[in-house]
Image (cartoon, rainbow over all chains, first blue to last red; front, side):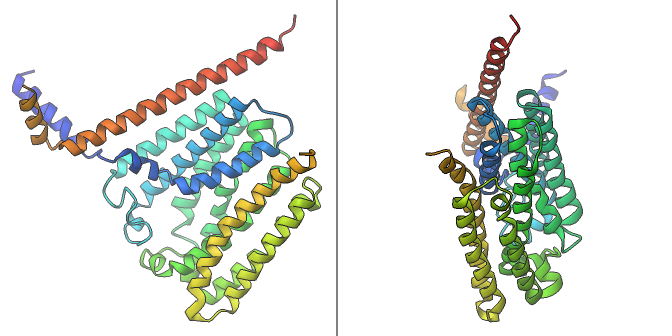
Length: 311
Length: 57
């Protein structure tokens, strides 16, 4: 190879790699750290609530790998949704639509992280939790992001399953098997997801309409959406009582979850009867409270267990 | 020599800011990999310990 050709090749390679200019912070935000924190928390509760004891090193490793898997699916979501993210005010500053990370880099990052998290889970923890983690990533990236999000107003109802898996993965990581308790945890997050996202969709309705995403307020209007939020919140109030009614949580959980649900139902009722002028502000409150609500409900589960054990 | 190399890099589009960003990204990637290696090592110790303690005598 001539010296001139070699120099040209080096320059071309340098220029090609210039596209890969995202900072470390950009790659971290590609993993949706705020969503990841809720995933980590619910997975941790699944691990704590599981019978028996898992060595702390294994428990921490399992939670880290679940977090990596969640981050991988978020990166794949941002790769696929870059076009619609660029249209929406809420998402246009994300690294891919803002041009700080190449779309292909986001895809490769998501795929590598998926492989790494699932294979490490299989080697370090157990095959069942690795299979569940792989299915969760597939469900969020393919079923929700690619197949449902742009096609149906039920996108978030079905897609909500992806966010409901982490406590089940935590449980399976600890026990290697599945039982009624993790299925109840799954059901709680599954029923919680629609009112949580529809409240956000009400506030960001113009964004979703501009991006042509068939969220419920876009397809059916605000009145139908607030009715659905109220119905789902009522269903959620019943679902969160299952751990108490089925006997695997005690009075502290039952009372705490009952009060938290009463506030959630009250806010949803307020949203349903609010005037058009106040609707967005109350929808914002419902959205913010829904996050706090899930945190409280899942924090009450181990707190109740701790209290029952005499501490 | 170093100045010549620096100006050549800038000519290729790598500004000092981009180079700093790349160094920082590489450092974080190295730390993440080291963390992963550490995690594999610790889990191996735990698993090995369990198996040794539970082996048939």
